[in-house]
Image 1 (spheres, rainbow, N blue to C red):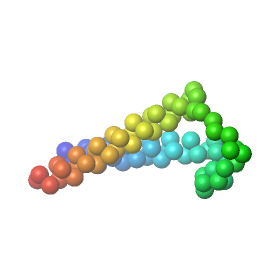
Image 2 (cartoon, rainbow, N blue to C red):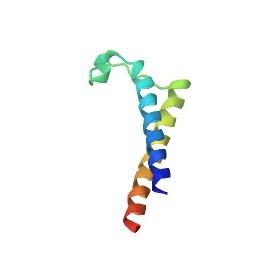
Image 3 (cartoon, rainbow, N blue to C red):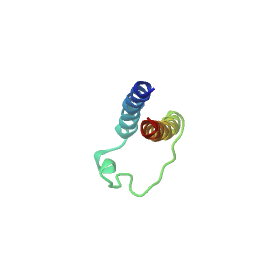
Length: 77
């Protein structure tokens, strides 16, 4: 069981890294470091960008749940 949880954690973490890098790719370096390259204009996510954002949130929640379950299962042994 522990091996399956570890493999799932590794797979989810790699996919999360890729998704986050895809989202950051569209922004400038100033946005990455907290600057405002857009001149104060807020923009909404649409289309593929919104889907990637929602998948990232879902995978983050799944990663957190698997991590918590892994710790609980390890203490039970």
